[in-house]
Length: 216
Image (cartoon, rainbow, N blue to C red; front, side):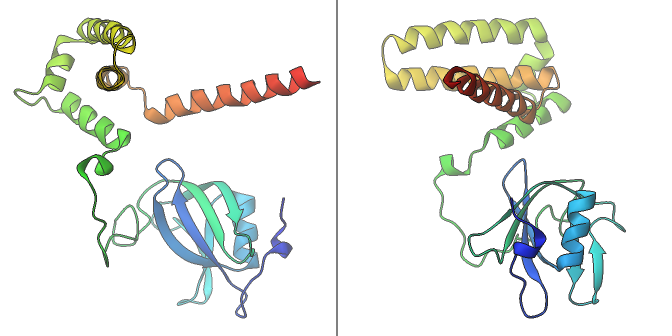
């Protein structure tokens, strides 16, 4: 555990702070802190910066309501840069964007599958629940209701078991089908991906504790 006094502030008494969305891992913004703003951040568990342009403390969200609730702060190996993981109440950028980093200087060349995220798929599924689209299989599942969704999960689970006895690629295909239908069920029951991650994370902590007890 470090103290504020262990950090290396520059000649102006500032240290760069990179703010990251705790859920997605997306970089939201870069700002600067002095010792006072960092101490306020630690006390309030809200990001507070030093505004170089205005020459004053700046509690993020004080005027906009877009507070950033701090979950974790890490320092780099030289102790002259901070990573701050937050749960944001709204956009980080004053232009209304979720992140300040939106303009490409060198766009990434990605294969189609590299652009895919479970969160993106979940957003699409939830969109099909809110606005039914004609011809959409996802909308069809929501129209038929919970029993239909559960029936499909049962079918896909059986197909995973059968595929696992035969072929790896077939197993990957069937697991993908099962995960999709599980996401549909989650959307139907208003369960978020972060809820599942939280539950799995709590089990990991319990598992580590059990291993430590066994060692004792």
